[in-house]
Image (cartoon, rainbow over all chains, first blue to last red):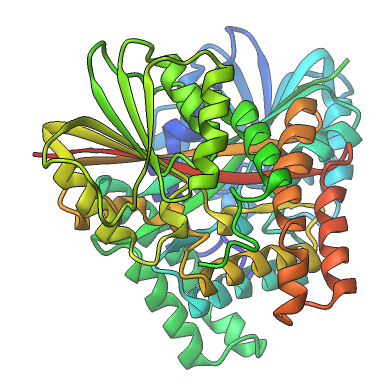
Length: 268
Length: 268
């Protein structure tokens, strides 16, 4: 997995992810809460952008938040400390070689992680093994193929395709959101339920125009400029036209649509 | 406007539209109701697929439902009579030459109409002139560019593009849904509000698998097979692969996503 473009790494990416979590927090987290005493595994916490929301919304549950990157965990611990969280333990661990006993968690939460994995189905199956019977998994992923906007722009769509192609070359799938239901089924979970979380932005929602169109989505696409050009996916001029096309959708007559998917299921 | 492909015309299309209205009725209509005595103009009622829902949900309002097609109106009158509706008057009229006095309606309802018009902004502006001050307009449109699915299929996307291209050649815009907000603003309405109505279908929703993936969306795409091939947009073999790709998404591991947009605004 190339760390040169994958989001979640690098200083500006940290800010982008934190902006994203603040902007989208209700959309993605409003219906997630864990009871007092519950043992919850957050698999792939990255820099802790979701951890803060997750743990503060369930203050009497206990979270074990893992990530494979020691650098990300340093950031995550800082973020959690700044937020005054006392119900999270951070631990470096590989999602394919998890240092926990079978059935040791009541719940698992996974957000923006499967998209980076070459074997998402194996990851889900491994995570299911850590859940007690009756325990739940919650998975949140984006889907870049869900993106459309007004005015439409061929260049903007090509720039987005660069991100999708780079993520695919690194073994991931930037359009995994739509696949959550069949993945949960294939991993052996019961009662799978997936709901789309569409971000619809027009000029009546200025905070999303700035927070989502500009600072989240377009900033993410801009972040792959160098690797996309290095890989010969698009010329510098065409890439910049694409980014300009995305910013154009933030004008008063613009509209932008993107959909996250949130799935939940039970281990029987 | 070529009537050889535009949906809403032809016998099988009538059934498809009625299937569609039945399947999607709550998604599109649940939040529309008019008070007793209200005078409501339904502009572009076609074969009456929406009229029945609209008028039966607001039994004490009075509807004037117009269409430019005499043939469609014959069907619409039959449908309304079968449903026992007594609060609808049907009338043949051109949306660009409306035979009504200014400010003669309390509300206007437009569903799956603007997508077929070369000048949707002018249509909205003309309709605004028929509304009393404080009257509302409600507009519902689809957006074929909002379609994505699993498994993904290049051929399926190309087959959908045929429909979009044919509708564009006829002066319409099959991706107009995303433009409702700027159109309502440009037409001079106040308080515009647009909400997406996403149809998310996976195997946990068998009625939508059949009613939406197969009988509504794929049936619509299949309906443009002959004109798409005649226009040289796709070879017969490739078109059929596209249709097969769409049906494939109705299998147990498939997922299908489509978004309608519903907008409302006020005439000041």
